[in-house]
Length: 276
Figure 1: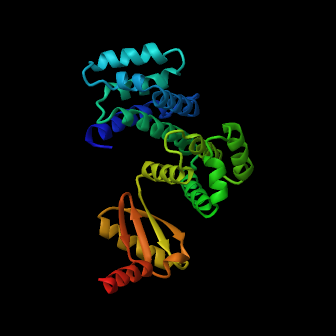
Figure 2: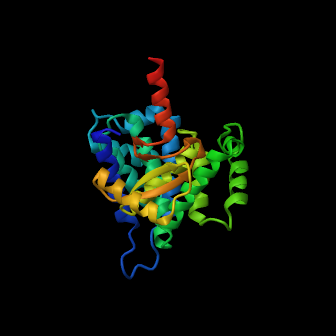
Figure 3: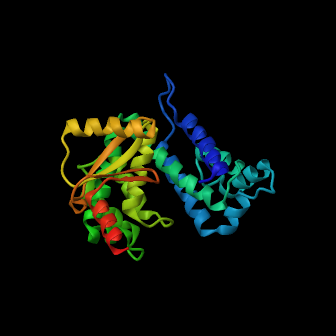
């Protein structure tokens, strides 16, 4: 997302965080799971109805007009908290209309992660999402079954329930089902990795995905974490993924930046040099 859209997402996220906070003495907190379902439903609507998406992001219309339109269109279907978050989002400026639906999808993920925070299981969910994404990467038939647009959502949900129920946190299962139902992005493995990074960001950490040809000891992982954090100038959390195809060395990916120190890359560079 570009500058205006990033600001819009941050503003809507602040409304979500404020609404789902549980102050001392509150017996019945906001149903974050309901909020997640509502926000995802609105994102799906914007995906299906481009005219609605354009109307809710029209920079020529005053913010008050856009928020009133959101209330008229969605007020009867949404929880009051969900509507407030959507109205905050549509009152913001967006670099592209499609960024509004992407933002609402991300906020629906964050709403589910609020449930994990309340259960003190955010780190557990983050790790489970990352591990399950890697499992899908190593099992293309399973990934295909979860991505197949012809397969009903009920079939995908049942498959995920068989795989994860009792083995992973309930929020992990919900997020896996949300990734499989994503009509916008489609790639379940990538969405799970994205969700893991969103969870890490909620914990105030930036994630580096480290691919290595051989298993690393805890001591090596700790030293590598210090070195990578120093390189990027901020605290970095490592998620280590074994990839024998690299032959040796490591590949580090933080966001869109990749530091490739693998033997495979060096061999490819040498091959290119020989062919000149």
